[in-house]
Image 1 (cartoon, rainbow, N blue to C red):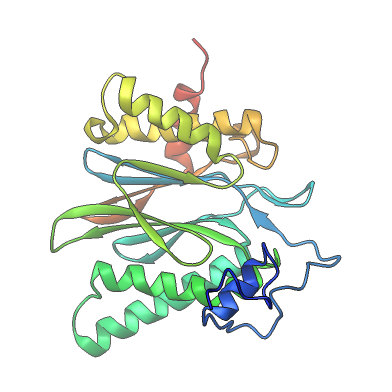
Image 2: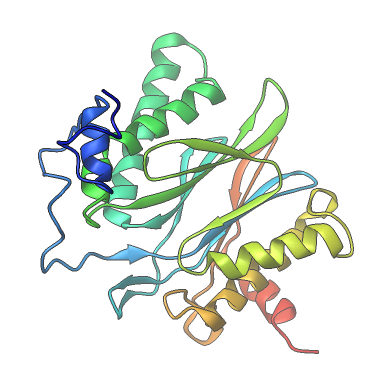
Length: 266
């Protein structure tokens, strides 16, 4: 009997189909239960794209719960090891715990095996954590939509991976974004890559940082859950680079200077 003709599965019952296919929830919470009266803090918009020297990763700082703004200084770009960053949109509590587990696992592997974990191993490690979190995610209690950026010292190439809720990963050749403000950002990045002054892969670090800041500011214009840069309150987006020398975050002094120039209207 095929799964589609099984009388025990209601048409459209996605979770019943997963269970019949052999998928098992690690969470003790029933995935078919609906979120009931619980408001969870969420992160909003992050992006990543390749530039000439590596990968740039950026995110706004606003965290929301429903229609309420809960926090304006949430860091959504998280270092995992010297050459790896994870950017998150979704529930910060869950994402921060995933980042902590990944950091511990990568360091344990490095010390026990006397070598750095391969990029493939790092990618699978995050996939496993996301798969284990499905039971919470389908209830809206622990949804995490991460972007994984890393530099492979063996191949001397930077890589960007995007993940869905079930832990499937997709390697991104040029650019990606996730979160509530991502539709605006993805459209602009595609336009910039195809018809801008030069393709994203040919842009300098300075051009890439300016573009990332402008993208987040534009997304905030159309999405209330995405926070703007607010120089008067010393609030700036998080911007980091992953290159052959490792990851590097831009400090507030650099961001203040760049925002003053790049966000000025001609």
